[in-house]
Length: 273
Picture 1 (cartoon, rainbow, N blue to C red):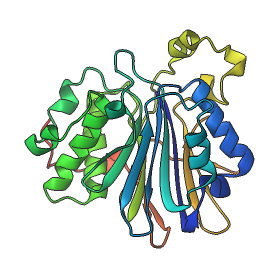
Picture 2 (picture 1 turned 30 degrees about the vertical axis):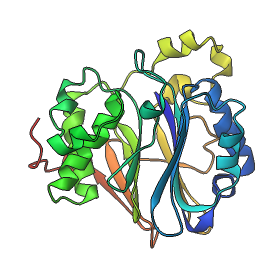
Picture 3 (picture 1 turned 180 degrees about the vertical axis):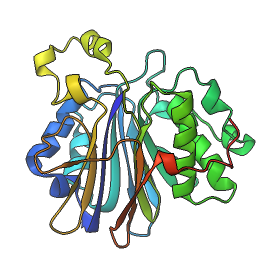
Picture 4 (picture 1 turned 90 degrees about the horizontal axis):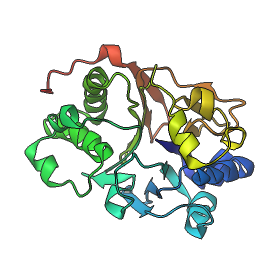
């Protein structure tokens, strides 16, 4: 259970510039609930995907503030972690995960892990460094890419299979490559984790926007300059559009054009669950 933010712009820009100063602080404040670490991945000027993570709370963390307010990039994802019970708050377990030149961040949990484990190839399994189900979700996608599929096809097919195996779990995610940004919105009908919110000690009326009624909703916004944003609930969504449910959206970082595919269009012949 985490918060996701993804941005792509026609020229390198800070998160604050694309999101807005007020919204930037709203996102940072969500670390009071999602306080089990944070991380970011971005496309650098040479087109390489870089990563920086902190396995401690983002509350009052100057590095999180700096990440949102400075450090321009043409594409970036940011993740605030609310750890699944039993999973350690370590660097190895902190999103985004980076491998094979890609970065991946997930909002949800896949329990039990058996179905996702069965989708991971030997090479991808050997590269795992942490204990999270989310890193294994990423490894399953990378396994299909290694078989020769495009990242888009691999993501759609993997999510479709996992959605069948985990109908009451969220697969919402962001994936960044040197040339593409992907947003997965696959959480329709997933129960909102009210018990987790209660255990946080934060009163219901002080929780971020839409957490008690639309926690897993993902929205998108297109800027006047063509920039595009994806975000989990919690921000002021005036002027934002809902990302269609049970879909994967691809953004071409060169043109900022988008393509959205429903999971129903998947043909997961490369996967063996």
